[in-house]
Image (cartoon, rainbow, N blue to C red; front, side):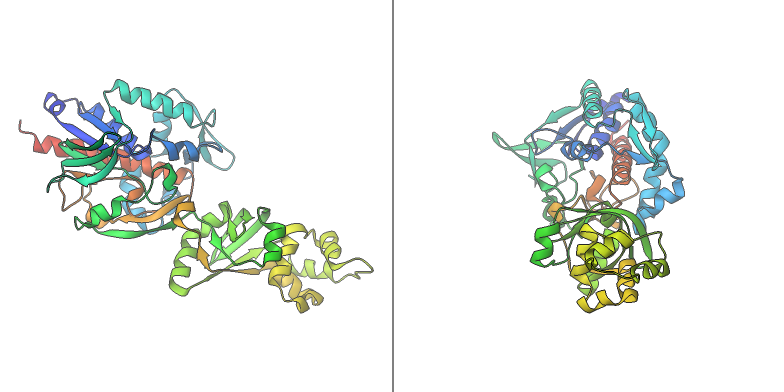
Length: 415
């Protein structure tokens, strides 16, 4: 959008200082519109910084059609956003902030120094130069009047009323509430008849209900180089045994399907291959060799390389009599059933699913029954695997909502 003198008279409130909210502020301020960004926390970008602690995975370099599949049943809604701000555009944007990017061996895209903090600092500096004002410790309470432009905030100095021309909500979902994504906005929008799918955990861990013996001995230990399968989907990687069950990247990759199956059936059975790349017949042949005086534990370790937490899992799951049957034991090694009985709480999840339905917003991200109110980011009803897919859609949806605000204000403002 070109800078327009008439737009400079407008004032927009962006509520939420995560990646989506910051991107909204950038788009709107570039159009010459005054932006005030409000956040309940002491500083912005807290979840963004947390996500970058192990290396800031911005996006992925895979083909666009493959990339889209990561958004599951919501891919049709996410597609227009990503088409306007795809991986190439994202890398260009990062480089304009002064940071080069690279593609890792797994296809993940990172800033060259791998860090989130320098990128966030540069971004905030640019936003302040563009005139964006930041208001911390401002918790949105809803509306002080019947319309959508009269806002109320709780501040350190009491309740503050703010009058604006348009509002963008970028309040995140319900995960990591300690970083600001509390989901408190759900009731506020529901009172205004906005259709909202319940917030549920995404990229989450699961409860199994280990025995105390197994938990005491193996909680916190990684399960490396395994294959997990569920509902015809197979993923290879690592996960971690927790005090209550399992979590980690391999589990997160299947978490949406597992979560939905638990909701439908009360539990979900995940299958683990503890010896991927090795044929069942080969395992049977090796384990059937004479054990001699060594224990079965040592026999498993020496013959099959199955020891530690993997051997512990077998002891936990497999009936004791099956350890004397090489065929049944090796079948369990290749397809060990793990019954998951519940998701971990949403507060522990990496992200959340559910939120404002796409049917409730128009193609410009404006809430249909509340003109002048826009939504973006994780508070919309979509989910994706952790890492670059989440960030990519948050960035893209923020740009979409920002452009929608500019368009709407141009229509509303007399020439």
